[in-house]
Amino acid sequence: FTGMTIFLIISTIFPNGQDLRPVVFERDNVFCGYGADADRADTCTNVFPSLHVFNTLSVCIAVHESEKLKKHKAAAIGVHIAALIILATMFLKQHSVLDVFGAVIMAYVLYKVVYDGKED
Image 1 (cartoon, one colour):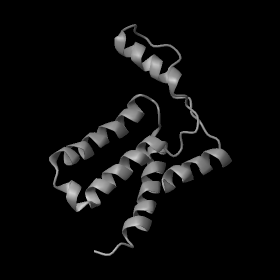
Image 2 (spheres, rainbow, N blue to C red; image 1 turned 90 degrees about the vertical axis):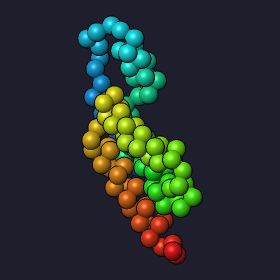
Image 3 (tube, one colour; image 1 turned 180 degrees about the vertical axis):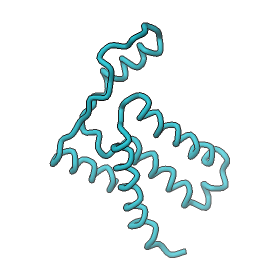
Image 4 (cartoon, rainbow, N blue to C red; image 1 turned 90 degrees about the horizontal axis):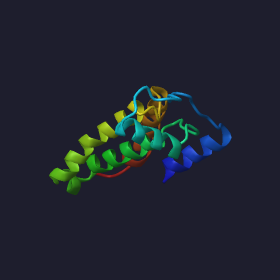
């Protein structure tokens, strides 16, 4: 919740965007069609830091820090799939590397605030 609120504050005070996506796809196939549909549905505005990446990292950290969840194979597999989600945001030109690094830094700082103060 805190990270998403910080994201909204940043986006309100410093509106941002990028122009990474192609205007026209070179090929006409089902995958390019899905990409074009995704581009129309999700604009390239307010992308720094990446909320997708921040939320994904937050879930990964929560699973890693939970003794109960660490024991479940599905949770461990999900954490590895999360890396693919982060890469997908860049491959689909939804976010740049800078957006991802911003999210990583924000997740790290909030991790320190939330988990470093807890008792073992």
